[in-house]
Image (cartoon, rainbow, N blue to C red):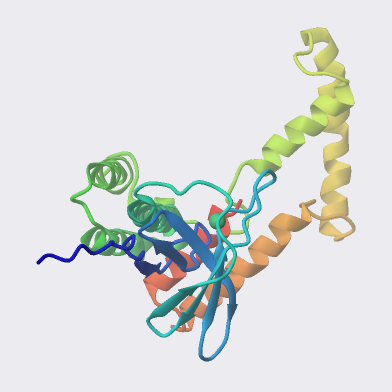
Length: 260
Ligand SMILES: [Zn+2]
């Protein structure tokens, strides 16, 4: 005699994906197509709440985690489940991770000129050794930096160095140019309009040199660049005192410039 068993819908399985959210926080995914973020964490348990919370839908469904045991809260989801959600979350996480690694690598490459000239090439070689050059874009980037900046017949890597230099951009000349346009009232001046303005400027040079010599005026800089320079100077100091390894130094300089 056969007994028929009414099969219960198979219970969903839960899985915590570390770095599952865009902000790098853990995400709980269930095989039935829902995902959760941490609401509250205590020593013994984690309270998860549904990650669907936007202007139009606010879902209050929760899951209580105690060790490996996951228990659904009383509130049902008020939105449809998403097929393959758990896989999607993991794929997204991997893409973000890869993007992050490549981003750090690029900022390190861009920070190379901040090293003393004689150390640039060695640091570049080290970065190249560690980088995942099986990825074509990454390999291409290294080839470009190598051919264009490291093995160029017009300049040596030493000449790229801005080590301990305060003026590293042409912002000062660009700023001056902008100021001149401002004085003229507009850009693209006709020749005979430009001449008197340049003459006026030329007359100011001696005067300005004097003021600078007496330290009455100094370089005008925006506060953001001043604090940036201060931070870089500190990093140079730490690097000189061997408190920072080359790679750490590059990473920190890269972080500062990555934010600009
Ligand atoms: Zn929900």
